[in-house]
Amino acid sequence: MIASLTACASQPTSNSVYRPHQAQNEQTIRMGVVESVREVTIDPGQSGVGTMAGAALGGIAAGSSIGKGNGAIAAGIVGAVVGGMVGQSVESKVNNRKGLEITVRLDNGEMKAITQDADEAFRAGERVRLLHSGGVTRVTH
Image 1 (cartoon, rainbow, N blue to C red):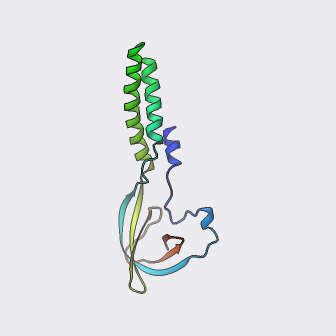
Image 2 (cartoon, rainbow, N blue to C red; image 1 turned 120 degrees about the vertical axis):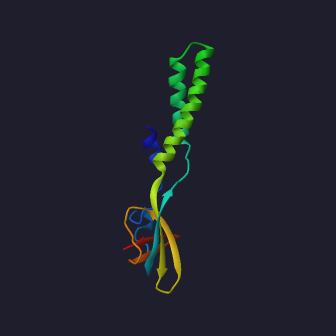
Image 3 (tube, rainbow, N blue to C red; image 1 turned 60 degrees about the horizontal axis):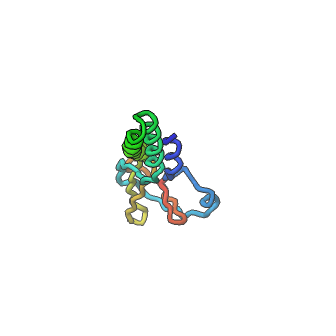
């Protein structure tokens, strides 16, 4: 449940994913050569969904299975805190994804670095296109 909820919070940065408002828009194309490629981690940050779901599940599980009265309340609080910490960790691991920082020397000599999902391989020396529109730049073959 936590994984499916947190996956919704992640925004793709793939050169192959276009949002509806980006489709059929003209893009500026510049050509260049890959200078270097570096593996990076793309971390979209925390939405809080994992923390809240973990806290709720931990509180319910611990509070309903341990003790009666004040003992159940204390167990519920501890369960919620621990569950929240676990949920936050799970959300972080689920949302983080592999990315590439691609440094390109454009034909005019300018150097550009673009970070995007690692769903296409790039190697130094390859000829590539930089597609730019609306503040978004993609590197493609």
